[in-house]
Image (cartoon, rainbow, N blue to C red):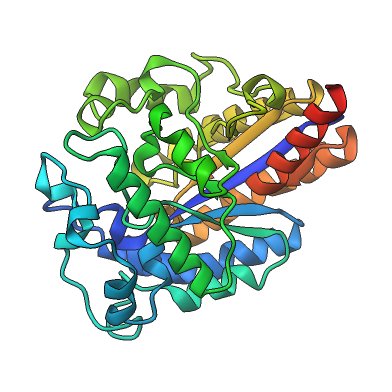
Length: 331
């Protein structure tokens, strides 16, 4: 793996990713995501970037009737102790035209039309695998619904990104059973460990993650792909860095953020390791021009690393295939 791998994954969820946060006024970002996605795709085409788009299965629906058709029956839906986490309580419209925050079949098709873009799953209902009340049987029902929704749109699922990065090791066998080959794990460090929403959102942990975005307090978060791969289970393609969107209040910190990312990308390229950048399309829904320029800056730097060290861009499916092939060769 001379030159290392540069991986990008996106958590594509629209309102399904924030419906459980009462009082959060975020519609401008969510609607803006519909304009930001084509702009991101244009950058990916220009720089030959292969990326994984982990889509909430509900977004595949073209109508409310399709959602009802694919959804698990009530006993198969997650029985969270905190009922606000259930997507099945959300009021939705009839289709993408009337409700562009809960339907995105046309937008997903635009992503699929661009070379190198993988459609993965973000579960069917933005399922929280570490919240109290839900069970492995309910998780399996959710995954089966996600597979059905994808299949109806001629998509075969190979990769998964867990909502809120709530990786539940006990559930990996379910994914393997249903043909999913890899998942995005969390970066190293206790403040990246997503053991339930409340703990992840503690002020101290959020502060440490914020600081680590600008200053190297926890290393480069680059890694040897083989060290995280399990030949008998799923391959863990760990996330390295959440790409924080441009924020006017922190604009003076932008050079530090970009320097932090580039230093780690270069470290990965020099040491034949993986650097995995991720974000949500709706993060670019406001200050879109600034965010696209930031992305372009990063992708231009990747191009330099590609020329100098041989770094390669790949999506999660491709990284998984590359890892398994090399594990087999070593064996």
